[in-house]
Amino acid sequence: MIGKTSTNINARQLQANTNNGFSLENSDFIDILEMDLQKFRSQFSEKHEEPAIDHSKILNSLFEQINEVDFREEAGFTNEDQKLSKKHYLVTCVEKILETANLNNWGICRNHDFIYLYNGEYWSLLDNIEYQTFLGIAAEKMGVDRFDARLYTFREQLLKQFLAVANLPNPPQSDKVLVNLKNGTFEIDEGRLNLRKPDRNDFLTYQLPFCYDINARCPVFDYYLNTVLPEIEKQQILAEYLGYLFIKPSVLKLEKALLLYGKGANGKSVFFEIVNALLGGTENVSSYSLQNLTNENGYYRAMLANKLVNYASEINGKLEASIFKQLVSGEPVEARLPYGEPFTLIN
Image (tube, rainbow, N blue to C red; front, side, top):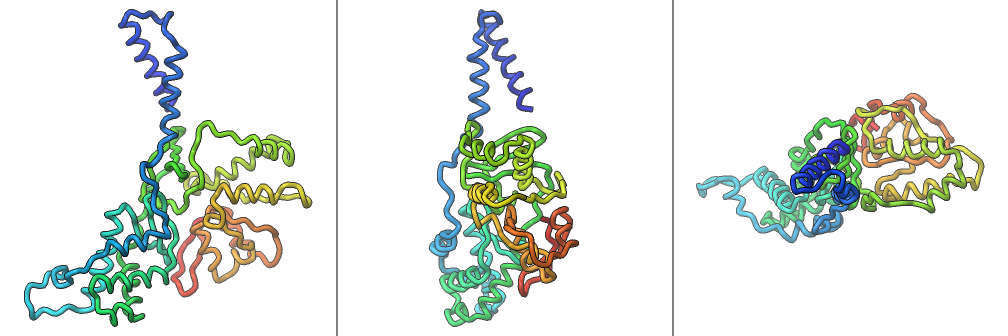
Protein backbone atom coordinates (compact mmCIF):
# COMPACT_ATOMS: atom_id res chain seq x y z
CA MET A 1 0.00 0.00 0.00
CA ILE A 2 1.18 3.54 -0.67
CA GLY A 3 0.54 4.61 2.90
CA LYS A 4 2.71 1.81 4.26
CA THR A 5 5.53 2.62 1.87
CA SER A 6 5.53 6.26 2.92
CA THR A 7 5.62 5.29 6.59
CA ASN A 8 8.62 3.05 6.04
CA ILE A 9 10.51 5.78 4.20
CA ASN A 10 9.81 8.27 6.95
CA ALA A 11 11.06 5.85 9.58
CA ARG A 12 14.33 5.30 7.73
CA GLN A 13 14.82 9.01 7.23
CA LEU A 14 14.13 9.74 10.88
CA GLN A 15 16.55 7.01 11.94
CA ALA A 16 19.21 8.49 9.66
CA ASN A 17 18.69 11.90 11.20
CA THR A 18 19.01 10.40 14.68
CA ASN A 19 22.27 8.71 13.72
CA ASN A 20 23.60 12.04 12.46
CA GLY A 21 23.10 13.68 15.81
CA PHE A 22 19.54 14.90 15.49
CA SER A 23 16.80 13.76 17.82
CA LEU A 24 13.24 12.95 16.85
CA GLU A 25 12.10 16.01 18.72
CA ASN A 26 14.03 18.50 16.57
CA SER A 27 13.63 16.71 13.20
CA ASP A 28 11.73 18.69 10.63
CA PHE A 29 8.69 16.45 10.18
CA ILE A 30 7.06 18.85 7.73
CA ASP A 31 10.02 18.74 5.34
CA ILE A 32 10.16 14.95 5.48
CA LEU A 33 6.45 14.56 4.81
CA GLU A 34 6.62 17.08 1.99
CA MET A 35 9.52 15.14 0.47
CA ASP A 36 7.45 11.96 0.42
CA LEU A 37 4.46 13.80 -0.99
CA GLN A 38 6.58 15.13 -3.85
CA LYS A 39 7.79 11.61 -4.62
CA PHE A 40 4.19 10.41 -4.72
CA ARG A 41 3.12 13.25 -7.01
CA SER A 42 6.09 12.84 -9.33
CA GLN A 43 4.84 9.48 -10.61
CA PHE A 44 1.75 11.20 -12.00
CA SER A 45 3.70 13.81 -13.98
CA GLU A 46 5.59 11.44 -16.29
CA LYS A 47 5.61 12.49 -19.91
CA HIS A 48 6.90 10.68 -22.94
CA GLU A 49 10.06 12.20 -24.36
CA GLU A 50 8.73 11.85 -27.88
CA PRO A 51 5.02 12.13 -28.66
CA ALA A 52 3.54 9.10 -30.37
CA ILE A 53 2.82 9.28 -34.07
CA ASP A 54 -0.77 9.90 -35.10
CA HIS A 55 -2.49 6.73 -36.30
CA SER A 56 -3.40 8.40 -39.60
CA LYS A 57 0.32 8.78 -40.43
CA ILE A 58 1.52 5.28 -39.54
CA LEU A 59 0.83 3.60 -42.89
CA ASN A 60 2.58 6.39 -44.82
CA SER A 61 5.59 6.22 -42.49
CA LEU A 62 5.59 2.45 -42.77
CA PHE A 63 5.53 2.63 -46.57
CA GLU A 64 8.54 4.98 -46.60
CA GLN A 65 10.59 2.41 -44.66
CA ILE A 66 9.79 -0.52 -46.93
CA ASN A 67 12.65 -1.62 -49.17
CA GLU A 68 12.95 -3.96 -52.11
CA VAL A 69 13.04 -7.60 -51.03
CA ASP A 70 15.01 -10.54 -52.41
CA PHE A 71 12.16 -13.04 -52.39
CA ARG A 72 14.39 -15.93 -53.45
CA GLU A 73 16.67 -15.32 -50.49
CA GLU A 74 13.69 -15.03 -48.15
CA ALA A 75 12.40 -18.36 -49.46
CA GLY A 76 15.81 -19.97 -48.91
CA PHE A 77 16.27 -20.83 -52.58
CA THR A 78 19.84 -21.54 -53.67
CA ASN A 79 19.09 -23.44 -56.86
CA GLU A 80 18.16 -21.53 -60.01
CA ASP A 81 15.70 -24.27 -60.90
CA GLN A 82 13.60 -23.48 -57.85
CA LYS A 83 10.70 -21.21 -58.73
CA LEU A 84 8.82 -18.77 -56.57
CA SER A 85 5.08 -19.24 -56.23
CA LYS A 86 2.36 -16.92 -55.03
CA LYS A 87 2.59 -18.21 -51.47
CA HIS A 88 6.19 -17.00 -51.17
CA TYR A 89 5.16 -13.47 -52.10
CA LEU A 90 2.10 -13.43 -49.84
CA VAL A 91 3.88 -14.74 -46.75
CA THR A 92 7.01 -12.62 -47.20
CA CYS A 93 5.15 -9.35 -47.85
CA VAL A 94 3.02 -9.66 -44.72
CA GLU A 95 6.00 -10.70 -42.58
CA LYS A 96 8.08 -7.71 -43.73
CA ILE A 97 5.28 -5.27 -42.96
CA LEU A 98 4.77 -6.66 -39.46
CA GLU A 99 8.53 -6.68 -38.80
CA THR A 100 8.88 -3.04 -39.87
CA ALA A 101 5.95 -2.02 -37.67
CA ASN A 102 7.45 -3.76 -34.63
CA LEU A 103 10.82 -2.07 -35.16
CA ASN A 104 9.06 1.28 -34.69
CA ASN A 105 7.13 0.12 -31.61
CA TRP A 106 3.98 0.13 -33.71
CA GLY A 107 1.66 -2.79 -34.14
CA ILE A 108 -0.92 -4.15 -36.56
CA CYS A 109 -3.24 -6.92 -35.46
CA ARG A 110 -6.58 -8.54 -36.06
CA ASN A 111 -9.25 -9.08 -33.40
CA HIS A 112 -12.46 -10.71 -34.62
CA ASP A 113 -13.07 -9.03 -38.00
CA PHE A 114 -11.48 -5.74 -36.95
CA ILE A 115 -7.96 -4.56 -37.80
CA TYR A 116 -6.12 -2.34 -35.32
CA LEU A 117 -3.06 -0.08 -35.44
CA TYR A 118 -0.88 0.55 -32.37
CA ASN A 119 1.04 3.84 -32.26
CA GLY A 120 2.98 3.21 -29.06
CA GLU A 121 0.18 4.46 -26.81
CA TYR A 122 -3.07 2.75 -27.82
CA TRP A 123 -4.74 0.67 -30.53
CA SER A 124 -7.04 2.32 -33.06
CA LEU A 125 -9.45 0.82 -35.56
CA LEU A 126 -8.20 0.62 -39.16
CA ASP A 127 -10.49 0.32 -42.15
CA ASN A 128 -10.08 -3.10 -43.81
CA ILE A 129 -10.24 -1.73 -47.37
CA GLU A 130 -7.68 0.96 -46.58
CA TYR A 131 -5.31 -1.64 -45.19
CA GLN A 132 -5.88 -3.98 -48.14
CA THR A 133 -4.92 -1.15 -50.51
CA PHE A 134 -1.80 -0.46 -48.44
CA LEU A 135 -0.78 -4.12 -48.64
CA GLY A 136 -0.95 -3.98 -52.42
CA ILE A 137 1.19 -0.87 -52.87
CA ALA A 138 3.65 -2.09 -50.24
CA ALA A 139 4.01 -5.42 -52.07
CA GLU A 140 4.73 -3.58 -55.31
CA LYS A 141 7.45 -1.53 -53.61
CA MET A 142 9.00 -4.75 -52.29
CA GLY A 143 9.35 -6.01 -55.84
CA VAL A 144 6.14 -7.86 -56.63
CA ASP A 145 5.18 -7.45 -60.29
CA ARG A 146 2.86 -4.46 -60.57
CA PHE A 147 0.21 -6.40 -62.47
CA ASP A 148 0.07 -8.88 -59.60
CA ALA A 149 0.35 -6.28 -56.82
CA ARG A 150 -2.50 -4.22 -58.30
CA LEU A 151 -4.76 -7.17 -59.03
CA TYR A 152 -7.74 -7.17 -56.68
CA THR A 153 -7.57 -10.92 -56.05
CA PHE A 154 -3.91 -10.69 -55.03
CA ARG A 155 -4.71 -7.85 -52.62
CA GLU A 156 -7.58 -9.85 -51.17
CA GLN A 157 -5.21 -12.76 -50.63
CA LEU A 158 -2.69 -10.46 -48.95
CA LEU A 159 -5.38 -9.36 -46.52
CA LYS A 160 -6.44 -12.94 -45.86
CA GLN A 161 -2.81 -13.90 -45.21
CA PHE A 162 -2.52 -11.04 -42.72
CA LEU A 163 -5.74 -12.04 -40.96
CA ALA A 164 -4.43 -15.59 -40.67
CA VAL A 165 -1.15 -14.69 -38.93
CA ALA A 166 -1.77 -11.41 -37.08
CA ASN A 167 -4.48 -12.49 -34.68
CA LEU A 168 -4.30 -10.69 -31.35
CA PRO A 169 -3.06 -12.91 -28.50
CA ASN A 170 -5.46 -13.04 -25.58
CA PRO A 171 -4.53 -10.31 -23.07
CA PRO A 172 -3.37 -11.70 -19.71
CA GLN A 173 -6.16 -12.09 -17.16
CA SER A 174 -5.95 -9.33 -14.59
CA ASP A 175 -8.16 -7.59 -12.05
CA LYS A 176 -6.35 -4.29 -12.54
CA VAL A 177 -8.35 -1.26 -13.63
CA LEU A 178 -6.64 0.64 -16.44
CA VAL A 179 -7.41 4.15 -17.68
CA ASN A 180 -5.42 5.30 -20.71
CA LEU A 181 -4.51 9.00 -20.75
CA LYS A 182 -2.25 11.35 -22.71
CA ASN A 183 0.62 11.03 -20.23
CA GLY A 184 0.38 7.29 -19.58
CA THR A 185 -1.81 4.45 -18.38
CA PHE A 186 -3.26 4.97 -14.91
CA GLU A 187 -3.33 1.64 -13.10
CA ILE A 188 -5.42 0.78 -10.05
CA ASP A 189 -4.48 -2.52 -8.44
CA GLU A 190 -5.95 -3.40 -5.04
CA GLY A 191 -5.78 0.21 -3.91
CA ARG A 192 -2.32 0.88 -5.35
CA LEU A 193 -2.21 3.78 -7.81
CA ASN A 194 0.41 3.99 -10.52
CA LEU A 195 0.89 5.94 -13.73
CA ARG A 196 2.99 3.88 -16.12
CA LYS A 197 3.94 3.76 -19.76
CA PRO A 198 1.40 2.24 -22.16
CA ASP A 199 1.74 -1.46 -22.92
CA ARG A 200 0.49 -2.91 -26.21
CA ASN A 201 -0.42 -6.13 -24.41
CA ASP A 202 -3.16 -4.31 -22.49
CA PHE A 203 -4.95 -3.88 -25.84
CA LEU A 204 -6.51 -0.55 -24.87
CA THR A 205 -8.38 0.82 -27.89
CA TYR A 206 -8.79 4.38 -26.63
CA GLN A 207 -6.88 7.28 -25.12
CA LEU A 208 -8.64 9.98 -23.13
CA PRO A 209 -7.76 13.43 -24.56
CA PHE A 210 -6.11 14.83 -21.42
CA CYS A 211 -3.29 14.12 -18.97
CA TYR A 212 -3.67 12.82 -15.46
CA ASP A 213 -3.10 15.61 -12.94
CA ILE A 214 -3.35 14.80 -9.25
CA ASN A 215 -3.98 18.48 -8.48
CA ALA A 216 -6.72 18.99 -11.08
CA ARG A 217 -9.93 20.69 -9.97
CA CYS A 218 -13.17 21.40 -11.84
CA PRO A 219 -15.01 24.31 -10.17
CA VAL A 220 -17.22 25.06 -13.20
CA PHE A 221 -18.39 21.45 -13.43
CA ASP A 222 -18.93 21.35 -9.66
CA TYR A 223 -21.08 24.47 -9.93
CA TYR A 224 -23.07 22.93 -12.79
CA LEU A 225 -23.72 19.73 -10.82
CA ASN A 226 -24.69 21.59 -7.67
CA THR A 227 -27.15 23.61 -9.72
CA VAL A 228 -28.90 20.88 -11.74
CA LEU A 229 -28.42 17.98 -9.31
CA PRO A 230 -27.87 19.32 -5.79
CA GLU A 231 -28.35 15.93 -4.08
CA ILE A 232 -24.85 14.66 -3.26
CA GLU A 233 -25.92 11.00 -3.42
CA LYS A 234 -27.15 11.43 -6.99
CA GLN A 235 -23.92 13.18 -7.96
CA GLN A 236 -22.04 10.19 -6.59
CA ILE A 237 -24.15 7.86 -8.75
CA LEU A 238 -23.02 9.75 -11.86
CA ALA A 239 -19.40 9.58 -10.72
CA GLU A 240 -19.64 5.87 -9.95
CA TYR A 241 -21.14 5.08 -13.33
CA LEU A 242 -18.47 7.00 -15.23
CA GLY A 243 -15.80 5.14 -13.29
CA TYR A 244 -17.60 1.87 -14.03
CA LEU A 245 -16.98 2.41 -17.76
CA PHE A 246 -13.34 1.43 -17.25
CA ILE A 247 -13.94 -1.69 -15.14
CA LYS A 248 -14.23 -5.09 -16.78
CA PRO A 249 -17.30 -7.21 -15.94
CA SER A 250 -14.94 -9.89 -14.63
CA VAL A 251 -13.78 -7.43 -11.96
CA LEU A 252 -17.08 -5.74 -11.07
CA LYS A 253 -20.47 -6.68 -12.45
CA LEU A 254 -23.09 -4.13 -11.41
CA GLU A 255 -25.55 -5.02 -14.21
CA LYS A 256 -26.77 -1.43 -14.40
CA ALA A 257 -27.62 1.05 -17.14
CA LEU A 258 -27.72 4.79 -16.48
CA LEU A 259 -30.95 6.61 -17.33
CA LEU A 260 -31.09 10.41 -17.24
CA TYR A 261 -34.70 11.30 -16.54
CA GLY A 262 -36.34 14.69 -16.38
CA LYS A 263 -38.15 17.43 -18.24
CA GLY A 264 -36.47 19.56 -20.88
CA ALA A 265 -33.77 22.18 -20.19
CA ASN A 266 -32.64 20.51 -16.97
CA GLY A 267 -29.00 19.75 -17.82
CA LYS A 268 -29.18 16.27 -19.37
CA SER A 269 -27.77 17.35 -22.73
CA VAL A 270 -25.05 19.41 -21.05
CA PHE A 271 -23.99 16.38 -19.03
CA PHE A 272 -23.77 14.28 -22.20
CA GLU A 273 -21.70 16.94 -23.99
CA ILE A 274 -19.26 17.08 -21.08
CA VAL A 275 -18.92 13.30 -20.86
CA ASN A 276 -18.63 13.04 -24.64
CA ALA A 277 -15.72 15.51 -24.61
CA LEU A 278 -14.01 13.79 -21.66
CA LEU A 279 -14.17 10.38 -23.36
CA GLY A 280 -12.83 11.63 -26.68
CA GLY A 281 -15.96 12.19 -28.75
CA THR A 282 -17.24 9.88 -31.46
CA GLU A 283 -13.99 7.91 -31.52
CA ASN A 284 -14.93 6.38 -28.16
CA VAL A 285 -18.64 7.18 -27.84
CA SER A 286 -21.45 5.77 -30.00
CA SER A 287 -25.05 6.94 -30.24
CA TYR A 288 -26.92 3.91 -31.56
CA SER A 289 -30.58 3.57 -30.69
CA LEU A 290 -31.60 0.77 -28.34
CA GLN A 291 -33.72 -0.62 -31.16
CA ASN A 292 -30.67 -1.00 -33.42
CA LEU A 293 -28.48 -2.37 -30.64
CA THR A 294 -30.96 -5.13 -29.86
CA ASN A 295 -32.02 -6.18 -33.36
CA GLU A 296 -31.34 -9.63 -34.77
CA ASN A 297 -28.50 -8.95 -37.22
CA GLY A 298 -26.04 -7.76 -34.54
CA TYR A 299 -24.24 -5.24 -36.78
CA TYR A 300 -24.59 -2.34 -34.35
CA ARG A 301 -23.71 -4.51 -31.36
CA ALA A 302 -20.44 -5.42 -33.06
CA MET A 303 -19.42 -1.75 -33.08
CA LEU A 304 -19.72 -1.57 -29.29
CA ALA A 305 -16.48 -3.58 -29.11
CA ASN A 306 -14.58 -0.37 -29.91
CA LYS A 307 -16.51 2.10 -27.74
CA LEU A 308 -16.42 3.10 -24.09
CA VAL A 309 -20.10 3.96 -23.88
CA ASN A 310 -23.23 4.18 -26.01
CA TYR A 311 -25.56 7.13 -25.49
CA ALA A 312 -29.13 6.81 -26.77
CA SER A 313 -30.90 10.15 -26.57
CA GLU A 314 -34.39 8.66 -26.51
CA ILE A 315 -36.03 5.35 -25.61
CA ASN A 316 -38.50 4.56 -28.34
CA GLY A 317 -39.23 2.03 -31.04
CA LYS A 318 -39.08 -1.73 -30.74
CA LEU A 319 -36.67 -2.96 -28.08
CA GLU A 320 -35.63 -6.60 -27.73
CA ALA A 321 -35.64 -6.90 -23.94
CA SER A 322 -33.63 -10.13 -23.71
CA ILE A 323 -30.68 -8.74 -25.70
CA PHE A 324 -30.84 -5.44 -23.80
CA LYS A 325 -30.59 -7.39 -20.55
CA GLN A 326 -27.54 -9.28 -21.86
CA LEU A 327 -25.81 -6.04 -22.82
CA VAL A 328 -26.50 -4.35 -19.49
CA SER A 329 -25.57 -7.45 -17.48
CA GLY A 330 -22.22 -7.91 -19.23
CA GLU A 331 -23.28 -11.34 -20.43
CA PRO A 332 -21.91 -12.81 -23.67
CA VAL A 333 -24.05 -11.74 -26.62
CA GLU A 334 -23.73 -12.56 -30.31
CA ALA A 335 -22.59 -9.86 -32.73
CA ARG A 336 -21.09 -9.66 -36.20
CA LEU A 337 -20.12 -7.24 -38.93
CA PRO A 338 -21.75 -7.35 -42.39
CA TYR A 339 -20.23 -10.31 -44.29
CA GLY A 340 -18.18 -11.12 -41.21
CA GLU A 341 -18.13 -14.11 -38.92
CA PRO A 342 -20.27 -13.98 -35.76
CA PHE A 343 -18.35 -13.40 -32.54
CA THR A 344 -19.16 -13.16 -28.86
CA LEU A 345 -19.28 -9.68 -27.39
CA ILE A 346 -19.00 -8.94 -23.67
CA ASN A 347 -20.12 -5.36 -23.21
